[in-house]
Length: 434
Image (tube, rainbow, N blue to C red):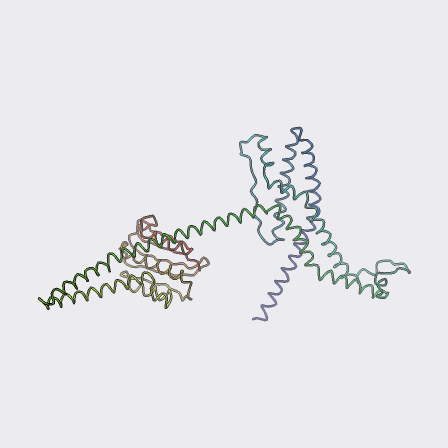
């Protein structure tokens, strides 16, 4: 298998190199005449427009020249893509409103900065185009001419006293020496053809990219940075909100459960202390009840600790933790859990709480008869799905229990969606990055 695939990979790589050589060559060869056309066309239009500024004719002439520059710039951006192997953003051009008058349509293009950059490129592009053209033509001519010397050397007439370059360099005379010398030159040009042509094409392409797409690329980077900043802010807000919600719920659960039991336990122990001397039997009964309260309090505290950081999740991973969670559910749960490697701690914890909170809501509100939990890895990340056949009506709106869960998922960089039509059934889906 290896001996078959490796040559195929090598052949594909070689074909890409030669394809790029062809792309770069045609880019440079076509860029030279385009540079000559644009420099003559734009300099003429610009000079006429400036010269006729004193009349009203100058402004329309400049606008026509600007619009021509836009057209040539669009063509050049299309040519740049294969050379640079990337997509270049199309810049934003100012446009006059549809109901604008003639003079409004005339002046709007003149106030657009990118249009002037297009014009500057059209005027000065002949400089890198000419340099690149000279190098590419020289190297192609040297490579092709040198490597084919043996085919055409005999056809060139030479006088008897003709002295060739090899003889001047002291390399001897004769047809064989001359052919070998020029063939060696051809080999040199052929071996350096690809880097020279690539360098010439990139020189011309980078000049065009800076003027024709530089501003648009900068705007895209700024927009991406602002979007990342907004996402980071939203995640921070969601994390704070989720933390506050979790703390409030923990405080409520402790107040409503273990705290009340501990107060009752203290009262029972105080009553038993008073009963020891007068009624030992009643004191023993009170202490037995206090022990029962202690056990129930410990169970509630264990349940609360599992809600904070379940030990099985830390020790054995997400699959084992969800299996244990489904086993404690009051609603029958069908699990579809693939074999998973250990994931990042925040991903496992968030996925666990998505399932735990969803199963709690199913037990409390849905009146469902069964539930299904699915984990699936996809190109987008870890997909966690909890479905039930209950009454529906769940929502992510503020004030609903799932809102805090959505904040927790968002804080982890994911997204939570809830589909719960009124006619019944709820589907909670969380996508978490991995």
